[in-house]
Length: 270
Ligand code: BTN
Image 1: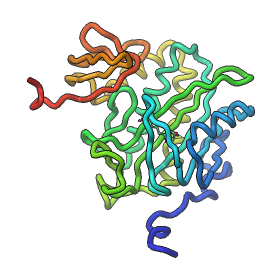
Image 2: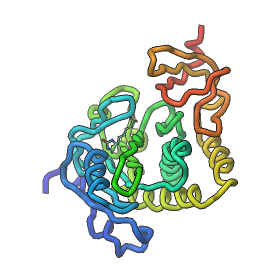
Image 3: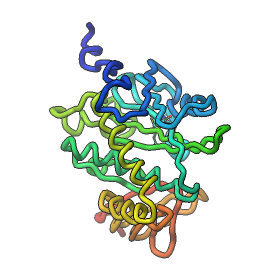
Image 4: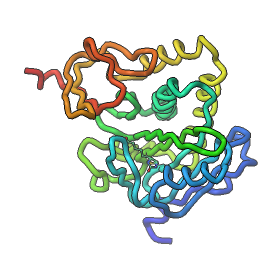
């Protein structure tokens, strides 16, 4: 065994089998050695008729996609790169909440493992001011109606040198003594997402305000001075005061549905 394979073990496919009682019933995990993007592969599966809770996880994702047309780069076996197929019954106007909910779910799991994680709107998961996980939700039209492909990338074992940008971190860089094994972390995120998604889908009218409250509690953006790069190229600055009923970030008088948020450090405010 090479030092790399012992330090970076493969995912344990036996623990990811449907018979594992830690995985909620109905979750089917497909492990692939290498693929361009798990979101792209799961989109194909969705169009082929895959059911809700089909999950694709890649040991090595070679052309990972990020939000706002960015790339998501992760060396083999250093990250959790996976996508979950969901078919929400709630109206499409509510779907942005699924992306916020997933960020909160990942935050909760990392916080439960002792990491001081927080969400940056809409769904980046931060340790301090550095990004440890990202989420890309894509809508797919299928023969049985629209489906959601929820892609999650968590930087687990990357060294500082392997991180793509200085604004990124990994669980190993943040705390080398506590790095969770990727299989256990994947199971924990899927189990928690199953619970949180179920509550959102079945919660009726009380679910949305409850979700908004718990999202706000997990979100480090609220109350902060922010700079938001809008898709139009316009830059909005101000204090983020809340998240509205559609999951949009409220900055001053404006509600933003898509944008790249930077938390402005107080010492850089002029
Ligand atoms: C972001 O820009 O923050 C979103 C990053 C999402 C990356 C994940 S990795 C698994 C899934 N497959 C992809 O191609 N992207 C997502």
